[in-house]
Structures are given as structure tokens and as C-alpha cells.
Image (tube, rainbow, N blue to C red; front, top):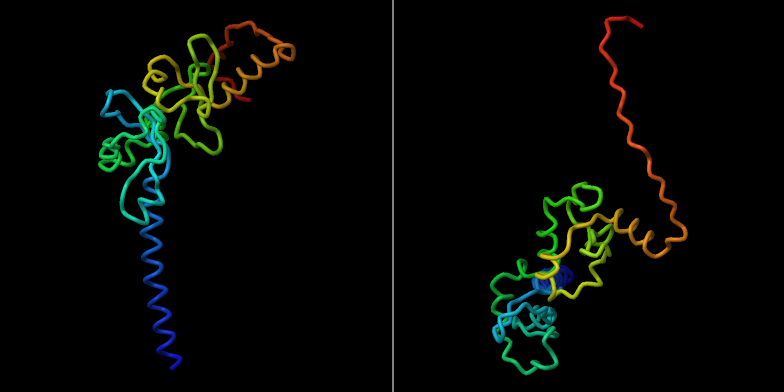
Length: 189
């Protein structure tokens, strides 16, 4: 009696785990802001997919779009783009790809892999202002990529501090002196 109950419970747990892992995998695949080309006007739009609905009912639908509320009743044909390549249209993936191999416009250090939760890179506008990613509308990314330069987290913080509290900043320009080069010697010390 106890053995059959244990076997049945174990089987139920395995089936539940398989179902849950499939749901969790699908939910992870479809969560997050995405960029698509709107079939209506051929412009970039930012959309959110209902990841929970996709995971539990295996059907994609939008929860938000940057063209709503004007176009809220659309047929959501853009979902074909998300379904065909859910990872490629993810905003974080697009931004990380843009930063790949780039150097900071201020200090010229390589930006490196983007770590969103710790020290995300920023943007430098032509007017010298810096912007963090939460301040950028995702549908504006193509324009941003053409008009802004990459900026590392340290330089963004420095420039923000300099802009927001100029009374606390003291500029000390160090004179650039030629470095003294030691001449080779055969002397023993």
C-alpha cells in the first residue's frame, strides 16, 4: 500500500515538474520588452507579449504596444516577428549587441558585456548630456543608435555629478609632462 502510494506520488511529481518546467521555459522566452516593425506603418514599435498566456495556453497576444491606444484594435500581425525569433527582437539583446565591441566615448575603455543589474552602460548625446536606459523609449532605439555614443557606467556617473552639482566640482588640469625614459645601463646594483 505504501509503496504504490509512493510510486504514484513520485509519478505525479515528475509530471508536475515537467509541466512546470515547460511553462517556466516558455514564460522566460516571451517576457520582456521587444522591438518589432509594425506591419501597419513599417515603423519601429515596442511591444510586450503576455508571457503567462503564451506559457499556459500556447498562444501569443500583446499586453502593450507603443502605438496603443490609437491602434489597440489591430490584428496583432506583428506577433509573427516575435514568434519567429523571440530572442532577437528582445530590447536587452538588441542593446547588448549594439554595445558589443564598442568603447566608451569619454575614457575609451571597452564597454564589455552588459550587466543590467549592476553597472549598465549609458549614452552620450551630441549636446554632452548623458542618459540611462530607463530614460530611453524602446521604440526610439534606431534613432538613438544613430545619434548617441556609448558611455561606460563610471563616466556616466562622473558626467552626471558634474552636470547636476557643478558647485562641488573642482577642475584640476594636470600639465602633461613628457615621461622620463630611463637609459639602459650595464651597472649592477
